[in-house]
Length: 216
Ligand code: G6P
Ligand code: MG
Image (tube, protein in one colour):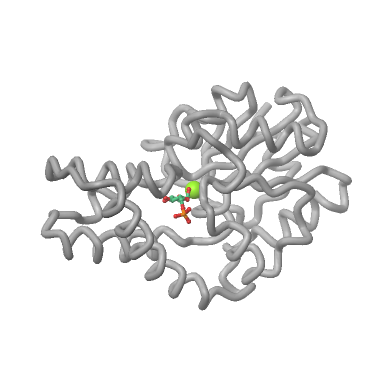
C-alpha cells in the first residue's frame, strides 16, 4: 500500500488548462502564429519556457532571449488574472473527500507540479495546509517528463519512490512518474494516459480503497 500520495495540481486538483490555453492562444495570435486546441495537449505538464518553445517552433520562429522573457511574462500576466478568480469551489469534484479520507488514514500527501504559480493556486483553493510537501516549478531544474519533481516530493517527506503513487493528467507527467519508479494513476483519457498503471475518469465516488483495489 502506497504511503505517500503525490498529486499533480493543474488538471488533477483544479482545471486550469483552459486558462493556460486562452493565455497562450492570445500570445500566439498576437505573433500571428496559428494555435488551436489541437496543440494544447502537448503543453500540459511542461514548463512555461518549454511551452513557449513549442509554440515558437510551430512557425519556426526565433526570438532574442530578452524577447523570449517578455513573451513569457506577458502570457503569465494574463494567466495570473484568470487564476486570481479561483476559490475552494473550483476544487475538482471528489477531491476534497478523497484527500480527507487519506488524511484520516495517516497517509502523507504531496504536490508535484511544474507550475511556478502552484503556491498561488493552492492558496486561492485554501489547500496549502493539506499537503506535507509542495514541490513546484520554482523548486526543480528539470521539467516533466524528467522525474525530478516527484523524486523531490518523495525525498521531502522521507519516502522511498516505490512507496509513492502519483496522480497525473498529462502524458509528460505519466512518463515522469514511470521514470521515478512510482505507481501512476492517470486522470483523464486512456488514449493519452495509457502508460499509467491505471486510468480513472475522475475522483467522484472514488475512495482510496476502491483505487487500491483497482491498482492491484
Ligand atoms: C502545469 C501545466 C502546464 C504549465 C506548467 C507551468 O504543469 O499543466 O500547462 O505550462 O504548469 O506553469 P506556470 O504556471 O509556471 O506557467
Ligand atoms: Mg497536469
